[in-house]
Picture 1: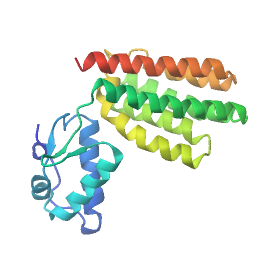
Picture 2: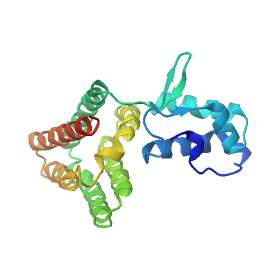
Picture 3: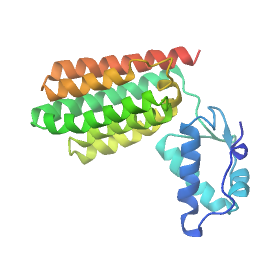
Picture 4: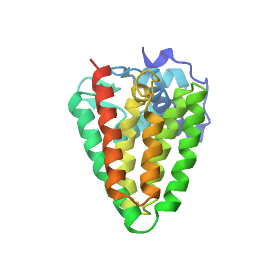
Length: 223
């Protein structure tokens, strides 16, 4: 699928060109409309949105910084095709960041407050699964892990996390497919429960299980 094949608005408010192009491209990557390997053409995107190439170039640069697209010298900008090494590296970093978050939350007596927030998101995720709305499930998955790290009140940890979670968005379509992750909600519920109980070892074990399952799912679906 090419970038111009997805429906786009005819015109955009001038002051928000770059932001809205960024949002549109990001959303279409995450929901799978722009598939891995798709080349993103500045000319085609500018024509589709009825803007100059400047805002499109700025939007693509933002997405390159987020890790959602890649620039290949002398070739262009593409939606990444994740290799096994990419998947392992993404989850290596996520495990390091979120494990540090769990340890800090429990050590600093933030367990109950954090678990309350996480349980609310688990409920929302459960409702989304019941509605067979896997895009919403994916959104709540991201919100769950974002809330976990945010509960540390560490700006540096959150800044590190924001980078790697953007790359995780490339995986959402696979990770939240109903036939692939029937245990997705239960894993999140167990993480929240172990944090509420102040069980660092248990929370880290479930978190690792959650990430290991994600890696297995991704690698099997990429074959």
